[in-house]
Image (cartoon, rainbow, N blue to C red; front, top):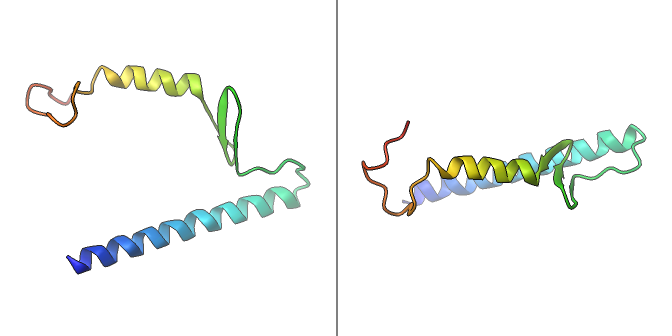
Length: 85
């Protein structure tokens, strides 16, 4: 059990370093390219922007409404009644 905990902690630390390093590199690259409004994460009424990727609320809602058809009503009670296709 201790080995699994050590591996999980190492994975979390490595992931946080990866996210932090990527964010710093993105910010420095954008700010050196004379971009006045360098933002790593921003949010407004219609979308969420993470670096240069934009996620629109409308698209997220469409995804969840389509995915809801394939998900069981109670996820704690998954059985063979709901085959995965």
